[in-house]
Image (tube, rainbow, N blue to C red):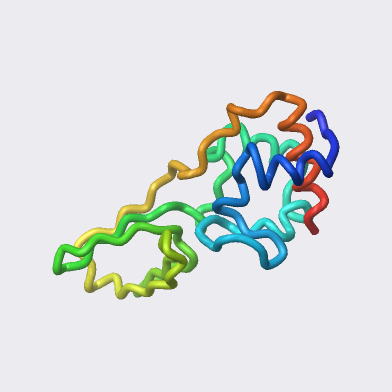
Length: 138
């Protein structure tokens, strides 16, 4: 794994890579995707690079996208935050925290495909810069 410049990586995170349009860091940004404030303490450089190139390969099960259909036919989409035997909690694209009782659902579809696009628009040097920035987040 090539680790680049974290300063350039931070600029890419907020700019060209568009990570900050979904991810939150240190209280700044939306909550629709996982908070990355301490991702550098939890993942290696190789794991971060893999997440950027193939987001679905490294997605934690709790962060999987879900589509929920209630008995009355209303559909909700979001990211799973918590699930137990009886309930599921999600955060939708409007950052609303929603709780559903499973016995009251028509359908609960949990996807293994990430909604995050792969970082194909970044050069290998830029990818290394973003990885370097993410490693600083602890």
